[in-house]
Image 1 (cartoon, rainbow, N blue to C red):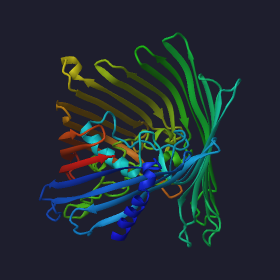
Image 2 (cartoon, rainbow, N blue to C red):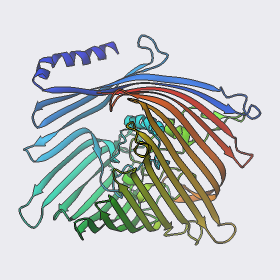
Image 3 (cartoon, helix red, strand yellow):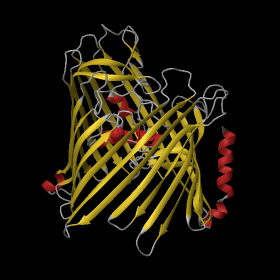
Image 4 (cartoon, rainbow, N blue to C red):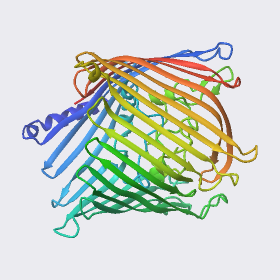
Length: 571
């Protein structure tokens, strides 16, 4: 370990003279993170589980960007982490967090090798945000930001992969304004040489910008196993090909109207599989078309659309979930005197006690119907058809950001019955700046968010379903001293009813249904103080209280409290 640190220091020192000529620059981040957890559960049902769990760490991400010439950049970032409780290097780990080479060849072709970030469209390659975020309070977002940073999740919905990508653009004097071409090729999984073949993932897009009003695109992504990387000849393939369009025109100087949409198809193949459950080929299609209206003076945009995503549409790059709900949380994995596995709560999601995805999954992952039963796999959720409405307003008045989203969907094909499930999903939120109302210079932000979901199916008694889920997402941030904020937040879930959750095999075929009866209240409250050194660096202390109560006496009611201390720095 000491040798590795000295080696890095030697590299930095060796470039000192070059650094004076602006041949390199340093960047990175550092943090200290401490957790103190306490489980609150009736001793009548649990006398075995240790009530308190404390842990924490300090780490430094030290990055360097080298510039061999004006068109080339080499990026290397090293992580040194020390879990609290170690001493003189005990519990210390050293890893390479990022290694990338990028530049522009011939002044035309952009290229990037190594660790790359990629996004295409919501139906091809798209890292969908996890459920439970409507208009999240700063006290929760502060800790979620740490999880997103560690997993390379960002606001642009990109996936971090390892491979190569290239891109270039062409500009024209007339007829067509520009053409942008992008391609990538990544390695998703190495082979074990025995039963798991090597898997790669690649694709690209062609975007034609006819003018500032009209753009059309062609997109293709493909994931497949490489032959002869294992003795067996099995091979999985999935291809998704789509076309998208965007057209906007001005009705007046203040109003715009247009259309946008995407349509395409997918194909999945299971070649030479001995398992009789494996389908030879699975194909399906989708389309999503919408009318867009924008009013510039008041910052309003309204989108009204219709979509139909086939039941067998498979797009691993856009359907992979960030959180694996099939896994137990990292803290208090088992509880009660029967040592049962503790189901993942939303407090675990906020705290990062979850198993998160860092590569594309060809399987439709497990989800929690209480948190999202309508679109658990994002916009590309299969077997959904219906209309949707989105309205947003951004301005500098008392309500700085307001949005409403409503979807009325149904299954395109019944599952286990001829009757189809119907879904109603509504979300709304706004940020209210009370300081503008009272004339106070320091910021007082009240965040309000609401999510309501209903899933229902009629028919015979054995096939009826009706599940209601409501989330209040509330927050308050008050700057009472320059740079010092009081932060409060609450996530209040109320879920009642029954649902049929699909149980799929490894080939995404529905094998059975998990009939769940839910009658629960799950609330998470948090409060804390934050001192902002500047926009990137802060020190905070928070206290979070979580409780879950069930109407079913067979399920355990319990709670957790958590104190966190976080020093977060970026440079």
